[in-house]
Length: 343
Picture 1 (cartoon, rainbow, N blue to C red):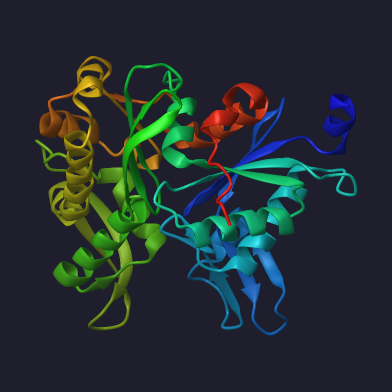
Picture 2 (cartoon, rainbow, N blue to C red):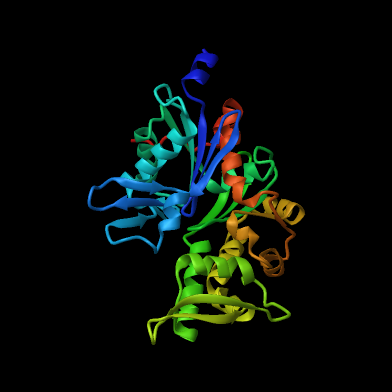
């Protein structure tokens, strides 16, 4: 029977992120990593582009084409567009589309409500899955980072994505205590946009803000000042203008959302049972997600918590790899999936 089901459609795992969607296919690994963006033609109601092609259009489209992000803060805000995006990605991965009815594991934020869970499942079924399972992102990130989630020792993971930061202590295949904060990389970009607007009277696009964050963003105050040229629209003259910003001012701009992330980590540690707290001192905290790549974040968290901090080997792919492990070893890891909500 297994071979027939395998032929019908390979099981898949999807990390449905605010910024990027990753698709993992059984026996093939991560086969797709594209921005969670859909370009919609408002005249015809049809989709003009999805993923990387649609991201290129952000801020550059004619009036009748709008680029939509169907997820905000890690949850689906536009169900119809999310369904179409998911269906597009699944079809892109499966070439034999008339036979595909995969089992689907979808990673969602831990703070998600029952209604939001149903929206994710609905999107999966509409996209052509034969059964949809849900895994919480911190659990998927921990499995993807290689932490021993099924053992009786505590592991702590901090997953900083585009729209959410997930902090969780995990033991015996379950989440013992968790905080889901609707602040992530996008919030840092917005903080940079607001700072540049206020200090330099310059309007930046979100893509430029992200470039600034990657180039000179830092969670700790930089010892030596360096500058980075940015281009945007002058709010006074309305003309394009270029200014230099320093890494120190960008550090100050993103300090407040970072402070909230650090607070969330400390709050989770405060709620941790004393037996597991001892394990954490030994095992430390693992950082995953795109935010883990921010310079100096590991140092800042180490100073705030006094714990050893490790950045996962492949932080951007941890959640997708962990969800993928559930697909590869479904019988063994089925216990970590979120049970069906009782009606």
